[in-house]
Image 1 (tube, rainbow, N blue to C red):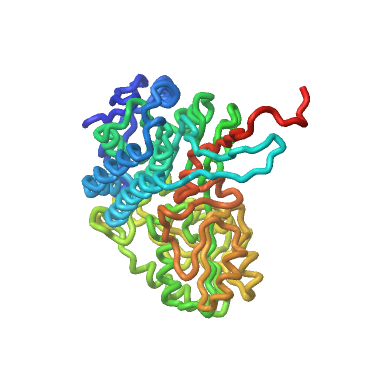
Image 2 (cartoon, rainbow, N blue to C red; image 1 turned 120 degrees about the horizontal axis):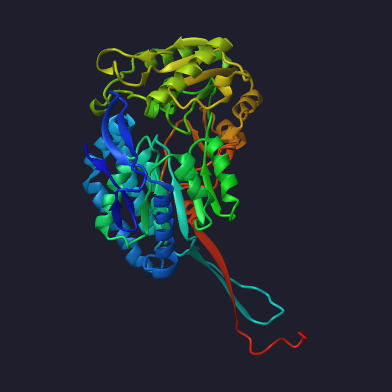
Length: 493
């Protein structure tokens, strides 16, 4: 079996650890590839390569914006040419249905093109200031941060990598990218494209290994100017502590337990369909998943009946065959989700459907969990308060608008949320009260490269995507130029 290498300082290397990681197809449990695991020595080499490229050779950093944009457009074209290959790899490595993997790669292409265009637009300002020092020309410029460590999770391996790499590179930074150890194969394909596109040596580096070692070194290193991370809140807190060593810039997109608030006047059929997307898309392995359905009491029974009927008809199977749901990403994660289901039962929640590992036919050896719905849930239950990150949704009820808002905000998280109602005034009123960074009205889950993505409270710091996503990877410098001749008369040495 081929052992995939990692990419450091413009070359594919074996690494010095002598260790490998196995990539497992979660639909079958079979090993499909082996990847070199980097040692701390390798990671330090990647950091120094990025530092050299940014601070010494400066080819990418100092490249004019039009030329840099042209490279990004070339990369986008190359990704688009390999869309089917990357998507199939992603589907086998992660477990998501092939159509969803194809959509991810297509979104990644758009993301590169968006930032290639955005960096050609005006980004600075000129200020008309009143100065005691005489006439001044005061203006700002946006400059790259420097060496950026980018760490991504396993649920959207390719797309979330591009969410970070595209704006970081567009801004002129040098990067060290660390994907999740569970899903590294699509990242290797991305770096093959970087190599062919002609990125300067040391600008883009790929390191692979556990977050506890490789990720920690990136967060702690005083030669890394910025660290961005998408993943659990607990790990994000550890990264914040480590980043304090050189007060590096940080960006964190963390956990969620997002509310999907449904009022009695909503279109019930549409609410059911969007709720399905909100919780069962990508097997529920979505940071913004609508995992708490908060529904007006008068329609709850009918809604649960329709939702459970739809959930029970969902197909599970080989993700390459495009079932409704594929397997969870790993055996360990499947066991974690099943453990939460047992906790829900013990806490007294009513299991409406699902709640078990699916092992029939071709799914016998895979990590499949049936779509699961818990009714009669209360705010103090762990399954209501804690992120499960799987196809598990909890139902809570309310009778007044005020009660709905209180329940919606009743967790430590604030990543996403939605409101379903045919009353536009009510929709605006309630959505404004939900403490979350990404919200929807009468839909759930659409995301766009042009719009900011990030959360409130313990769901993170900063924003990805859109103009804000580019600014995350930039520093703003103020420049003041005197237009006066001589020193002002009031100033005395």
